[in-house]
Amino acid sequence: MELPLSADVYCTDGTYGRLIGLVSRDDEPLITHLVVASESQPEQRRLVPLEHVAGADASKVQLNVSRDQMITMTTATQTTDIYEPMPEPALDPTLIRTFEHVDHPHIQYAEQELLPPGTVTIDDKTDVSARGGAVGKLSSLLLNDGTGAIEALTVHESGLLGGKSITFPASAIDHVNGPTILLAMSKDEITA
Image (cartoon, rainbow, N blue to C red; front, side):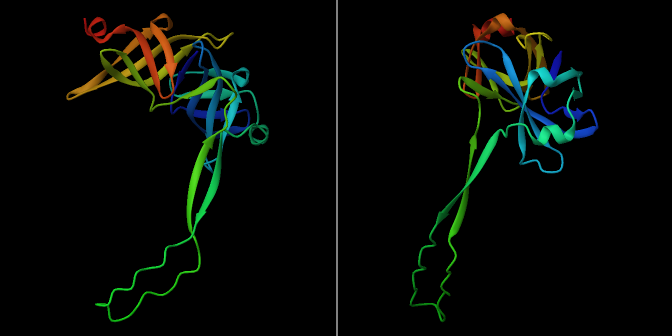
């Protein structure tokens, strides 16, 4: 089953949203969950266990759950408000009038991933590197239907004249390190 990142996601009763990431175990190339953003509220990201995937092709992922069931699934991120008091503006003697005092605090937002222990997120921003440098960005994964094991990954290599896609077998993956997938080969072996 091919899972293209940024594919549309469909539930049994209609469109739900977009696939924005995959959750992989950090000790082996095994996908455990999908990260799906709601179409109506993209900030609502849900962790969907892989067993709820009924099928997938190059442009869409079909789930075997309804949209109502999606709402009950675990959220992938949590947003926290951080309140900071506004600093008092300095009074400049060259100004004709002074600044008004602002009573409300400055608000910042921090987003935290809520992933199962021992897992990392893989998305379309995931870099793929080999010994000797960067190879490109991850564009899709080919999974074993029964186990969720990664069988191959497709990497888009950017270039001045467009770029090309390269497919690597799962045996080429050395390990997943945060936002980077490291390959067990050198960049020279790839370009040869």
